[in-house]
Image (tube, rainbow over all chains, first blue to last red; front, side, top):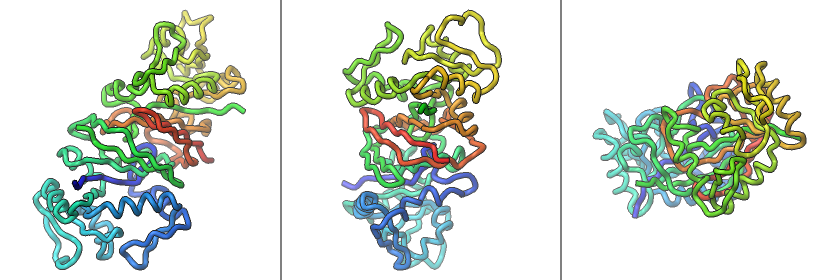
Length: 195
Length: 195
């Protein structure tokens, strides 16, 4: 059965970006800190990481059938130049669909995150739905739509910045025992959300 | 050589207490979630946890020679009824020393955290100095006094609360690769602070 997983690289103190959109060179360092090549859907962009991290990431990408993101992340990345790095369809939650994105891997949903998750599940088939971005992750968690939280915990302390979830209407949220994979410059933790 | 280590049980999103001093039943659940008894310095208070967690905690306690805390934690716990659970001398950073605590394991330092760490190092001998409480941990980290951060990462999301460090004058702080011990209801992570 498909499941919905929110994932992010996160500082030890819980931030997915430092103050004023800084700190990504620390958060994403592990994606370029080794010798094992992991190609992305963009031919000009290959990641290079440790063997353990590459195996973990490939497994996660193979298992993911569709992605849900918010409009902000879509705009920030310019629609990833036309294809998300993992090469799967992307559902974008937005107030208004942009033009010029017909016949692309991008679908725009204007009636909220629950609808977006449903659309993504249909696209994902038996695979997982990945949720990217703190606001989307929070909305999914609050709506009871999230099955799993995957955190790539990075050895840096930011002190402040953009939190993974931020304030939650339904806190505290209890999680199960994590799957732990010790990488190079990162510790991968995957928790099921308890209900 | 002695080292200075700040330690805390922390939620996945970086809080050492939930909003309004709540959530301790989640943060400290692992200390009572198993069958292996770990006696404390208080004869009436024995912890019971998994074998892996007990081994980790005993090792940490054996290695610790003195503790530094702030006045707030000292007052909150009522001076732990006269003895800190790990049975080591405690240096309390305060503006004014209370009376009635002569000839106890508690020393009061009124000239700041650097002085408190020096005093604790003298008490600890070859063992570690443990720093408890978010404000003390932050002050030590900002003053360059902290060698290691030990986080007991608990599978709960609070959304808001008391952060481990909070805003830092010297952020971002880079850490080394962690020592990882997978416990029961907790993941122990110990990082060296890079300088």
